[in-house]
Length: 511
Ligand code: NG6
Ligand code: CA
Image (tube, rainbow, N blue to C red; front, side, top):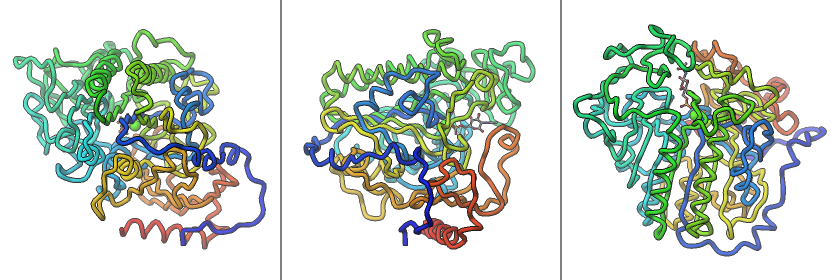
């Protein structure tokens, strides 16, 4: 059964309950849904539960995100599917858990993880008549191996359902440091071809190891390959000088592209998937934001991310289409301070709590790995409120297909359930259970959280960091109602609960 087990008496932690409101009552007054509203997913990178004002941050101001929250539904128990980027994004776009594909963080020259012709979120919206775009960080692979960065780069986003794509191929800390627009590197000089390798030096350009004096930020060994724009990267690259991005300008470029797309498609239903590079490393804020917070670069790129959000919102307002647009704001995995570069994130963090009250962060099996700041906003349709419903981004595919009136083929998008009423704040009935992926799997059900034992240790580079990855060789069980911070492993006190959850997890794996 998927019902929570009854347990003895206890004093509920007020932090657990104070966010629950009855949004169902409000929901009854809602008007019918508009046919085919525009859909925008604003997707931050590595933004933690406590990193924005409406989730408790005070050291950095996020007025635009806070405005979304004040006028939309702010979720307190909504999750990305995994504690790292590639798996979360794969699930968001395919409605399937990433462990089914063994998906893990990809190098910048990895092949596309999705099959052209397979069911995807942009694909299903395209079928429903939407014009679709991805503008921002991709990190889902491109091509079929051995990419020629100087020719057509595909298959990629345009082959899995996006009409338009303007992407950072992987992450900004990985080569190649160029954009790819509809399968081509824009502004590439054919006389200066790009070569990329993740295994050996290509070209003559200095690396972080050979020329540390050229660096704006010092980096760990993994991030000490080719130096581009004063920042050493993961991987080697040469050529493509005219096409290389300037890190400090990326948000401006992406915003311009996003605005162009919105303006061009304002009179027809559109879907914009806008995965921000912020606040992933390397953190290189534009000069408008550099020094704007007391948290150093990490705070400054949060402020910049907030500005990007505000730019989109203001455009929707000025085009008069805000009331016909559902905006979903969230993040792909939990927060991290030191992710490879010496950018003072740790030194200047002070009392800021990137994970809010939760334990862990990026890479972690603990709650902050996947519990994300999450807001839905649709003026005139969504009533403002706070929802404690248990939600997973894996459900966005089926939910948004329902919103667009597009039926899903049976058996497609295996793990995705239509939770549209929950996302729109019309129902407080979240998921009965929820899977959290990291270097192990965890299952939430009712008040319980089970973390599967993991014999295999985390990669060396991760073990050397001050990150609580939550991995243990034996099972962990937490009662999140009593112990939202996951301090007391009660697997020994409640062996039957642990066994039940383990069995439920095994069953999901067999699906
Ligand atoms: C890790 C990188 C980290 C980051 C991460 C991907 C090292 C030591 N660390 O392997 O810096 O790039 O991959 O982050 O190489 S994510 O948000 O895209 O998942
Ligand atoms: Ca990420």
